[in-house]
Length: 455
Image (cartoon, rainbow, N blue to C red; front, side, top):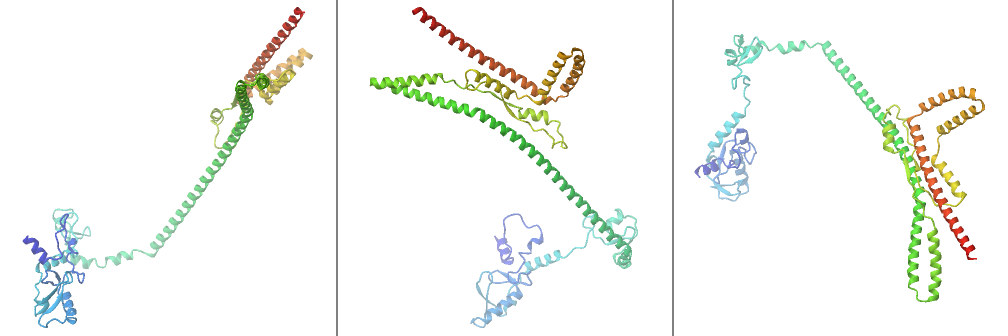
């Protein structure tokens, strides 16, 4: 308690603070500052309220207080700047106030430590550089001369070395001629020009890279748009093929629901006349609905598929040939199925037309067929000459066949398979129609024979 009281009395600006203790004198500058002049304490004096201020600052305060005071003349009043309490000074004034001796000693030590220290040796800690090595032309300490790297070197004291080396800076500056300065300036200009040239090349290359990839992006965007347009066309064909059938099936569903509702209303009818009239109408609509053929399911094949086509056709595409990269011609081909059946020759004609439209023979296939027909005609007219000519044509045909691309061979194969499927479906339709015609004919014969026997 006595230590705390003594510290607060003689060191008013120093208060116990939490945290780590102060380790250097530099951190005391704020605590050693007068709160009136904001400078280090100069002749610190302690007021009766235990606050410390500079003697000069207190003299100024007493002068201001005396001008505006009606105090009795033997005692001069003073108001503390910190606690604002008014106190009476002794008759002798500020000189009678006690001096804060401890605080003054701390300030003097702080001022001594704040002065710049002479340079010390880097190899030997806290050893002053008080000698000059003539051989190495640098400052050294005593340990450097006795046990260090400068052992045995000629030395000189600092004053003599200062006098001797006083003219050295001017001699060194004289070595910097105007020619050397011109060389340095020219070298700087050359380096700046080279830097500007390289930066221009980098900017040009950056523009080329951006333009190159923008061109690639534009080409890829066009190819992508072309592929999507082909798929959109195929999607439109799908809608064109299935929408009428779906619409027809919905109409049949609505018709059947109407018939079910009509049948229920007929069953609930109590009047015989109305019942029989509705029953007749219901029977006619029911027979007509049952006789109405159902549309068959059409199985469409989307060729070529996008993933397979891109893997096969675009695997060998290079950046240079990107503009000539192929775009798939997507088409919808019917594998099997039928539309609403027609009677007689209309069905046969429509079947042939559907077969031709679905096959869609390519120009290469037509050319092969024409060549085969020409070969048969030559053999029929002139067997000998036609045979020799036929062999040459066959060799040309074989070369043409070998020269066909994989895409054409695939198209021909798909066309052949499609033709087989369509022909099989046509044969099934014709066989079912023939069986239905035979059944009708047998029923007519049975009815005619029954009529004859009854007569």
